[in-house]
Every structure is written in structure tokens, then in C-alpha cells.
Amino acid sequence: MFALGIAPTNGLYFTMARILRGKGLPFPLWNWGIFTALSSFQRVIREELRPERRASYRWLAIGFYVCVAWSVFWFVRIATARSFP
Image (spheres, rainbow, N blue to C red):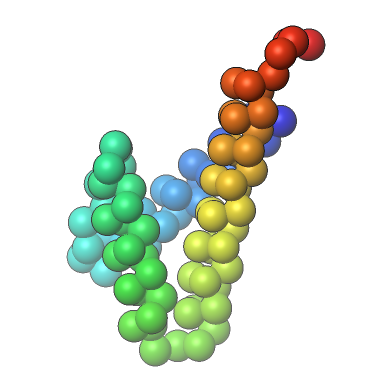
């Protein structure tokens, strides 16, 4: 179940990286740079002039956050399980 969240998360993350780098913004991939990257992506969403593209970016961000939440939920559930299947 954990892997069902990780695969799409990585795909969405690298799609956001391509969008940000296309706009000339840095997109650090590792460690604490993810928070900088996500705030930069939120800024790109706010500054986008075309409403259809802004909506697409917003759905991309929502999908990313949902996949991360799914992955964290299952990681914690697996890590705290008393017995493993």
C-alpha cells in the first residue's frame, strides 16, 4: 500500500520540477529543499495568468499532497504495526 503512494508522488514531483525549472526557478531535489520547491510551486500557481493552466497546476499540487499523505499514513501504519503480514 505504501508503494501505491510513492510511485505517483515521484512522478508528480518531477513534473513540478520540470515546470519550475522551465520558469527559471531552482528546484532542489533532496532533503529540506523540498519545502523551498513546494513554496516556489505555490508561488507559480498564484502568478500564473492563464486560468486553465493555473487550475492544472493546482490539481497537480493537490495530487502531490494527497499522494504524500497516503504514503505517510501507510508508512506510519506499517512502522507501528505489531505484526507484519
